[in-house]
Image (cartoon, rainbow, N blue to C red; front, side, top):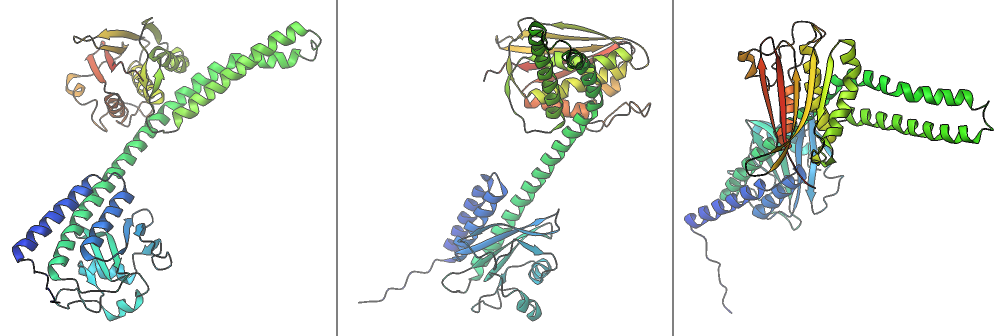
Length: 425
């Protein structure tokens, strides 16, 4: 029996294989949709290249100011891989300082491995480490992977280390982009919630007005019930009225709670006319106190559509409140219409038109009203705006695949038009 030695790959073949592996790794990263999935694919790729079967990935947690374990492979004991590693841990300090792969294998080639301080090494030998791979972005440590072999260690060739370093850089870029996207999404959610809270004072006024009548009927029933407890017709009729009024109050309370609470977009089959009427009901008290007349013209056969009810109320209330603010110095008229539209391709759309007789918007400002933090409401503290409301409204309408348009004439008034495609569930 003759021993056969496996043919060694030429440098050219090795470079080609490394490039192909790096390309595949980058492609796998591009399809990941969550941080745990990204972390698992990073560990899988590094484990395959290094042939170390055990792995754990830590990512920097800015809120806790530490590194948090995101995922581990092959059930590394939690005692060996703790959920949290502080910034002052010797391993973190070592990786942040040297910014290179630490190979703790006794077979490691000293020419290919980063130096390891003796004092530091003694302090983290309990962690599951044969390889410690830093993930760096703009010179900062944002994550690191720890790899360990189940069957013992082998020396990592220099060309494999170079491939792993390239994979680590690609992984760092992906994690950084994902974290930036999550920060942006969180900021947008906060902006929307802030804009909702801006309207709650007005909604509270409308709510107080709406529940006055049902509370009156409930109070009257309670006062008269002892005297007319034997009058079955009175008790039966008034009980039905009181139950209807209690249900009405419950619905109003739920409307306010849903509006104040930020929720992920949720499309449901909605009647746009009903949403418009609900918003007008909430602002009626404020409009009356300012001498503003509300004219409502709702198309009788407006098609229902798939909308996020609370987001659409947020948009409409923002526009209605802005319209009333524009008429704050004088009484005026607020006209609200809904219209059924049919495009040239016979596609059915719905339109909400909100028109005020306020002071209007100057041409130089009209092009910027949807820009973040742009506002003209600095004349008084009462009407001072954040400059986010119209930006959020614009984004919500775009997310509904709709359009929002504005026309304005200085000194005459402003008209906003919201066009929404008819979506069936």
